[in-house]
Image 1 (tube, helix red, strand yellow):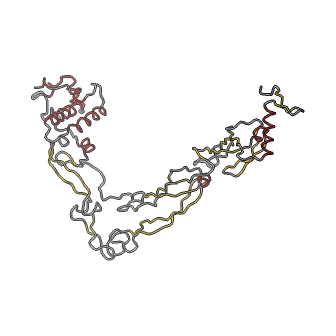
Image 2 (cartoon, helix red, strand yellow; image 1 turned 90 degrees about the horizontal axis):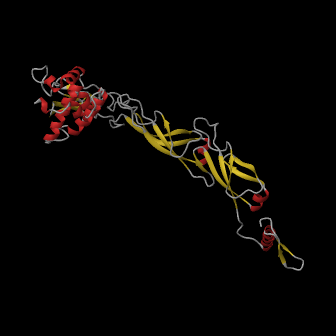
Image 3 (tube, rainbow, N blue to C red; image 1 turned 180 degrees about the vertical axis):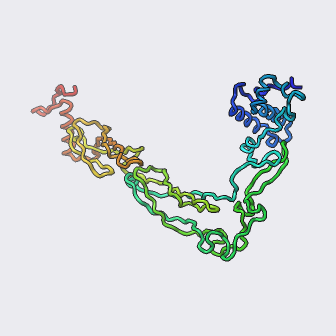
Length: 382
């Protein structure tokens, strides 16, 4: 009886002010979960699917929803204006929902959904390859040549794949449509599923006498040299797209693209992060203490830098505009950050050692006396 039915909004799990999009989304979830084709032999799932379908059939119709909101289930009882079936939704078209969920091309009594035929023009697949460049080439850009095997239209058959003097025949299995419609019985009646024709592979044509040069493919594979322009500032792992250098299209479709992935070799001195370059430069203790001019290697060549007196190890300096250019504008460059590290000599001769001892004594306030004894004085750091 009608009183035993659950509230339609409760069935779909939506509020009473839910819009059409919310109703459709809720029903998609339930229909996909409980559809009989996904739960063969499960009576409980079938009952829940019927319940959800009935609820959606009523609430998705503005007029029926208005009646339901006013009179409840009684509005669709026999003799009260109902249309039978699952509570009055037998005339509702579910094909768009089930076509999206289950891939059915044609639903409910042989109705067919629209869509492009499989034997229409189709774009060719993209091809991928790689190229290795140096650190400097990534910074400033370069041009590279790569050798690839690409397909070109067969000059003998002009891409038809058929022997000269013959023509491809219409596929008898699909009648030139490139697709086959399979009909099966489901809960809602006949369901038609569209698949690519296995005989002609979707082209709609059968080549009985194949071209001896391309063996019926319509294409000849040839080695070609492709010039690739590497933009300044490209980073490791990024790709360059070259339009129209991929696989040929089908049935007059455009060629795909060629994607060239760039691998940047490591540099022995420089490291990169985004548009910044990092390096470490050793300096002597004397230069750090007294200051002086040093030469720093950059991607633009050596530059002179004035070290300040009293510079400590691990001091970082910035060379503005000596980093990596942006891909969009090669004139806009990042910075080069240099870490100054004070080096300690590993081998010293006796003269150098004595000089360092005298320096250490002087820094610690120890001075030699005339009688040969050393007397401690209050040093600078004491």
